[in-house]
Image (cartoon, rainbow, N blue to C red):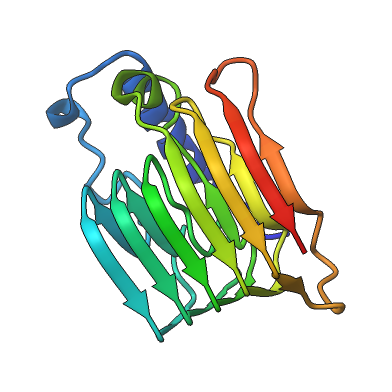
Length: 196
């Protein structure tokens, strides 16, 4: 497993602490050369009616595709190859009505990780990730087919996973479905269906 760079982890801790203390966003200066943060490769922020189809993404710096507070998102026929630290394939966060289908994942972390905000962000916005369908996807490499969390403070509900496959050669796979959180995050998870 690829380990995160220490400078990146220190910057993440600093940013989480600023959010925990409700520091105004304009005072969270994390963009200079000392920040050491890795961005998502593609992020849809508060978007509606999104179609991402038929592309290949190689070596994203962090999460590969991140629909954030978005609605009516279709992600179809993607190929993701990314083997760095935290290289999830698709991370819908506080997003609703999401379809992920016919995609191929070969990455260093979770193929699909559904999230709904971390701690104060999720509690303040109170926007669950819900109505998410994942079908006909293939995982060549990675830790989980579908992870729920670990950021789930806003809640996650109504997730349906069908007809997905994992390569027999995938030695990194830990779970087909993994719900992860801790006692500090809160949130809820309900109505999760998996049919292989």
